[in-house]
Amino acid sequence: MTQTFDIQLPKRFVDSPRVPEYSLGESSVGNKSVGGVVLTLGGQDKLARFERVILPHLDAAYNLARWLIRNEDDARDMVQEASLRAFKFFDGFHGGDARAWLLATVRNTCYTWLQQNRRSQATTVFDEEIHTVEEDAMNPSALALKSGDVRLLRESLEQLPDEFREVIVLRDLEEMSYKEIADVIDAPLGTVMSRLARARGKLKEILCARLKEKA
Amino acid sequence: MDCTHAQGLIDIYLDRELDPVRSLEVEEHLRGCARCAESQGERATLRRNLKNGSLYFTAPSDLQSQIRRSVRQAAKAEAPAHWFSPGWYKIAAPLAAAALVVLIVVPRFLGSSPDELLTQEVVASHIRSMMADHLADVPSTDQHTVKPWFNGKLNFSPPVSDLASAGFPLIGGRLDYLNNRPVAALIYRHEKHVINVFVWPAEQTSSSSTPIKTQQGYQVVRWSRAGMNFWAISDLESNQLAQFTDFLKSSTPAYPG
Image (cartoon, each protein chain N blue to C red):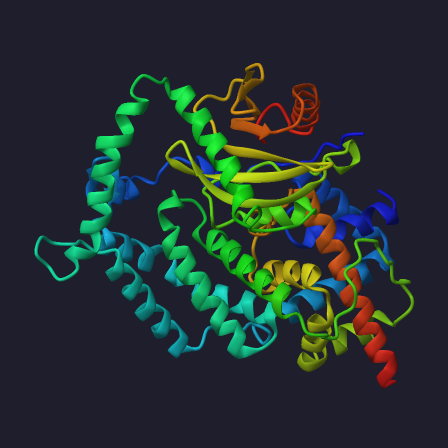
């Protein structure tokens, strides 16, 4: 049996038309071709463009890394490494959403690190099944009031599995559109929507459980 | 609109991602249903609390300057190499090697067509991938691990499907270099046989394919689909490779999304 998978290419990164101001890129101006070996002579040009286009999104990069890695020092390393990697592959960025492009690289870097360094941290298991919370399990107004408790909210969000936490961070903290999130996590729009719904359900579940513990 | 339907749409409505017609329907339902309205209020409060900035980690200012410095250094490493500058000797050797290649190797291939050259490259790459212990950069049977791994490494995203159910499990992915560009290499296994599939964007979007060729004992086949070029190579029997490519083609949509 063969399965068919939705493999929408992140088109905006692949063949989006070049933004005019970028059209005099390194490849057309600064490089020399010697016997088929291209020497990049446009390092400074590339640097200026990178600083203008990518570096304004360092806060977004750090916020995502910090929420995925959950400690300051390693998150700094992730952003540093991802920035260098982004610079190295910057020739492959042909305009489009620079923030989503950088965040995709940050996310990749973090996941690689997490795979290698995963300590037994307290997250609930990532589970695509929907666990619906009984609507009346908690008095909604109490929940609303308590979710203003920053510490409780932070701890509950930290407790979410990475795949759920990242979509909430991208949507609610970073305020990205579904399309932008789809580009960052390289998934179809439908997956983004269902994952967000599950992430929110789970977050509410954790908040309720913690409130009950306290009560 | 009933409550179950409305409950499913409230989040999308609050995210302002719902189309105008259904937004109006949700609003209408909320006006008439206290329970759903309460639920909407609760979700809106949670969202506001998440958004109010207290959970957002901004980059420390010294991290900003640290990154600026290291990117500048990386740019310097790519900067021009002038004649007689101290760094010149560093590229002199590669240049001399390139010149040797041009003088010695290129004439051997002058009679070959671009297609034959590429076939030779594909065969060489396949053999090399199995020689050194470097078949996969990302060994994983999960297409959702392999596909995202290519992000930031390539300027395209190759279609990745696992064909384990058809007897051809995915075993990983690798970056490779073919046809003067970086390409994605996907590795599949059938019993003891390794199959390398090389993928890169095609110039044309039309679909095409060619019959299986044999070179140095390996079966090579290529096709284009969904705006991508595919080359598959293996030491499988040609009918088994044909079966594999049929499975792969049917799991790739005919047109790019």
